[in-house]
Structures are given as structure tokens and as C-alpha cells.
Image (cartoon, rainbow, N blue to C red; front, side, top):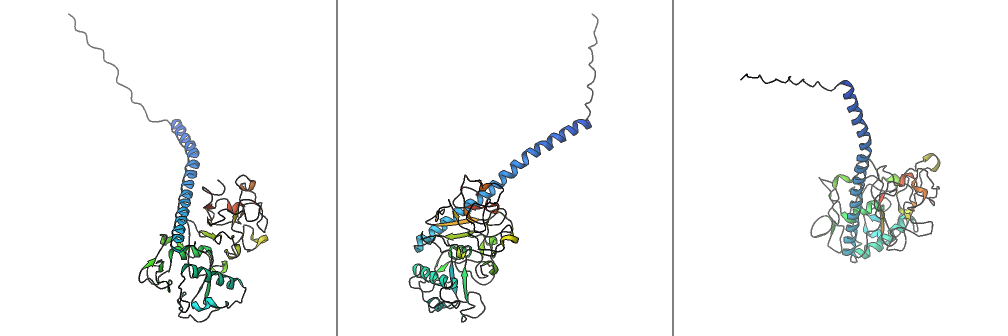
Length: 331
């Protein structure tokens, strides 16, 4: 029988690498996919960051509720501090009826509700200059942003490791005493790196009490806190001023409305019985405030506000994150 030699197949030919044309096609496809995906990824990331701010606002709300459960009232959004507490009981050095004196009267009412046994014969050197005797220079009005930190955080200890918020003394006569003995608060755990002084004296704030900025990570204004005065009505007179509008040349440095309403109807405020908390959003600007209607045309790129802030939400407002919307005002 004749042996047959099995047929041998030809060795496989090595496949060469990608051709230049194939590489170019792959690169173009990847670039197109990246172009489609990146905006979606950025939008999702931005929405997640906004969600974290909204969650933090909810935590601040819960802390204000805890403060009210302890003291019976919510923190005010305007408060007057004096080095010499006896000055609370006389007309402010600026004169009776002035904004400073009105803030003094409001503050006395707040003190007597929070601490009925408060000793007005005591003193505290708030600015650490060793002087508690000159009423004209040792009186300070806190804005709402500063009140948020002061009342939820308490006394700021002097020394290393600032800012160190220590709550208030449980001594009913001396709640502003330094951090010794038992304490009320802090009611909120502020991130130390975000306790900053952004509202300067030129903007209506002061350098004694810092404010709290959100987690969006840009140079920006802090959380704005505005209390409705136990439901009796919002007051814009103590909001930060001298913060430039978008068009400084025509509108200058003016007091903003700052508070948001649901319609043109007078006193149709959001959160009419409690308070508004507002993050300035990614642009770091509060905007004008005023009317915010979810279905109006104030969400487009046109600024429909008048100088007296009685019409529609403007561009700077649209990325604001508040305690009366799910995310930002433009959503």
C-alpha cells in the first residue's frame, strides 16, 4: 500500500498592523465619542455638585430647627454686637431711629427671648483691641450670612487653630462667655476651611464674624441667610450692599432686593414663615433677587429686571441654589 504524504497547509500569513487610514478612522471615532460624552459627563458632574450644596442647605435647615428647639426662636438674620453690653439699653451712638439703633432694639428683643437672664452689666472685647468703652467704635451689626455662623456655631475662641466655634455658655447670665463650662452648640459642624470673611465692611459686613461658603470651590460670596422675623415679613434693609450688579456702569453699587417672591404680589415670599438660604452658585454672585416664577421667561439669557428689582430673575440669579427649589433657579 502506497503511503500518502499528508498535505501540508501553507503557514498563516502574519497580519500586519493597522494601516494609517485605519488609525485615522479610529482616532476620529474616539474624538467624536468624546465630544458627545464630555458635555454629558460635565453636566452630570455639575448637577452632582449642585446636589451636594442642596443637601448641605438641608443640613443647615435642620440645624436651625435644632436651634429653635433649644431656644424657641430661629436665629435672626440681623444682630448688633456691643463690647459693653450696657450699650444695648441706650440709644446707639449713631442716633435714635438710625439703622444701627433699629438693629440694637431688635437685638435686645432677641437676647431677651434667647437668654431671659442675660446680664447687661457685663462686657466682651469682640475685636480683641483691649477697649470696650467707646460705643461709636465698639458696636457691630452682623449680616444674615454672619448670623448664620454666629448663632449656629457660637463664640469663636481666640488662639491657634482658628476658626474654632464653641457654641454658647449655658450660664444664662453670660452666654457670650469664653469656652469654659457646659455649652449650647455648636448646632452645625462647619467645615473650617470654608469659614471665611467674604462680606467686607465696605459691603455692609464686618471683620468680627466670618461667613460660610458652599462646596463649589470658587472665589465667591457665602451662603445668604434671611429670616422672615417669625413670619412678620422679610426685611431687605440689612442685606449686604455695595456688591456690584452685572452692569456697574449704569446701576452702580446698590442695595439688592435679595429675597425671592413667587409673584409680583406684595409679600408673596418663598418660605414666608421661616427663612431663605441662598447659595450664589457657580458664578459666585447672588444676583438681584425679586420675582422667581418657574414658568416665566426670566430663565433665558435676557436680564428682565429693572433697577429697583421688581420684575424677573436675571442671569446672575439663575444658578443660585436655595432652600425653596430642588436644585438651581434655572432648573
